[in-house]
Length: 321
Image (cartoon, rainbow, N blue to C red; front, side, top):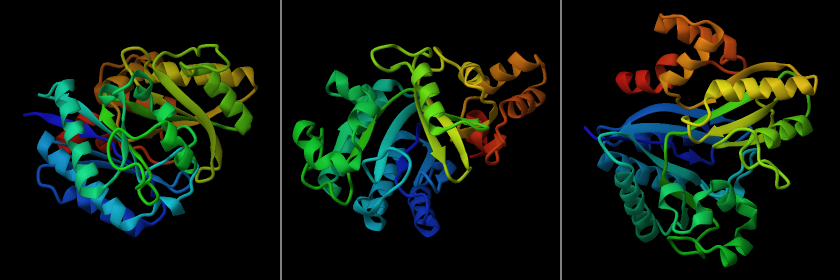
């Protein structure tokens, strides 16, 4: 059976009624499992993780866009997380029984429906990018929503009417590999320190100097919800950089600044292999359940909010769903 995952990020993290209605729009499609909902008040953003057969996921995502347009207004949005659209980014990810080309086609079909039926403009990124520089989400989202009047003249959308951006903003859509969103908490420090660590570690680096970790994006920020500074990461290729490498790299750079860590936070789902690899660094246990408990403890995955293995470990979540 072909299965795809999608992790749409919606610019709403404060109105619980709206979030529930957005979730219902996904659940209304038979065969689609809504595996996880991760909401951030300060970021004003909710990440939905869903899995299902390709056609069912396509319909669920269309429903989510449609409901977002009914409930939300991007011109009224504010939050700590970079954003420029109601459904800010919508990746489509092959899980089993489908190739990357199959997901590319799925994303293209969704973009056509958004343009024709909802008049939503958007960029195509990652494997769907029509130009090399458009592969990168950070490039497309630079300047955020407030920059759109000027940006859309220089960087026109790949689909949908450019003039119809005020309520919906502009979405970013495409097929990509599995990505892990992971934040490391600083016990003390400052925004400047968090941003410095991010610049040192992210692949793009800063000021023409590459960073230390391949296929990793990072920013430093303060999250009021948790009253702490975080270095926030996207791990874009787990074959090149693993979660444990990111955690240890932050620990090393923070130590140089005289800062200790206060655990870390997973946003959404993670493959089981990443936690087993982390556990092996600390205590090479043969028992899977014990190893995952070691990873939870040593990485401090409960430090700022609960971590639920059955819901956030991909293999467990798909089985439960």
